Length: 284
Image 1 (cartoon, rainbow, N blue to C red):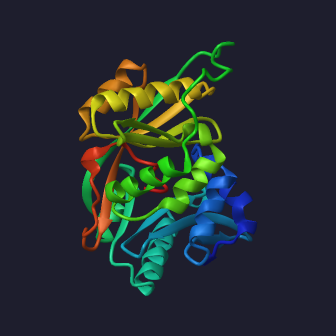
Image 2: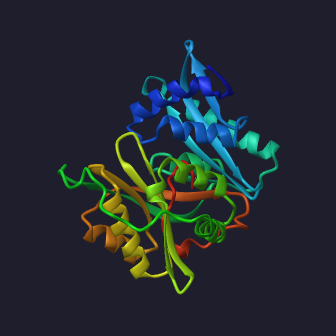
C-alpha cells in the first residue's frame, strides 16, 4: 500500500468507495475538493487499485477541513484510514494551517482523539422519506432567485457565521442548484439563508442559517417545496432545539450522530449559535 496525491482521474475510484459506504456525494463534489485543494487530497493504493481516500480544504489558512476519509471494506483494519489521516495532518502542517476540523462518526471519534482532535459540538443527521407523487415532481412557485447584491450579503454573513470565507464553495453550490440558494430579509436586514445540493440519492439542505424561528421555518418550508426528491437530508446542530423541532414537525427522523472536532487552537469558531444546519460533514 502506498499514498499519493489524488487527481481528477481518480474521481471514478472515489465514487466507487463512497457508493460502498452508502454516502451521498457526486462527481461534482469530488471536483469541488480537487479544485479547492489540488495538492491536498490523497488516495491509498493497494493491489493496483485505489482502496482509500482523504480530502482537505483550507479556508483562508485560518483552518482546514478534513473529509471523505473512506476505506474499501476489503482493506479495513489494516491502518489505511490512520495513514491517510496522518498524511492530511502532515500536509496541513506543511502548509502552516494552524487548525484542522472534521465531523466524526462515533466509530471514527476515538481515532481522531488519539490524533489530537477534541470535541467542539454535536450534530445530528435527520432524514425525510416521502412518498412520490405527481405534485412532488414539479417544484411549487417560489420567490425570485437571489440577486447579485443579495448573494453578496449572504456570503458576507456566512463568513461571520462559519468563521472564514468559503464563498467560492457556496457559489459553486448555487451555480449547480440555484433554487436552493435562498434568503429571508425584513426591512433590508438578512435574517436567514440556505444553500443546498442534489446528491446521488437525496437532496441535502445546508448551510441553513436563521436568526429566529420564523426565518428558519420559512426557509425549511421553501426547501421542502423546491425539492422534488423522495429523500432529503439535514445535518442539524444539537445545540439548536428549535431547528430540531422544526425537522420533527416536518416529518424528518433522526438517522445518526456526528461530532464536530478540531485540532489546534480554535481561534475562528464563527457563530454556531446562528446555525440550524451545517453544509455537510465533508465540507464543514
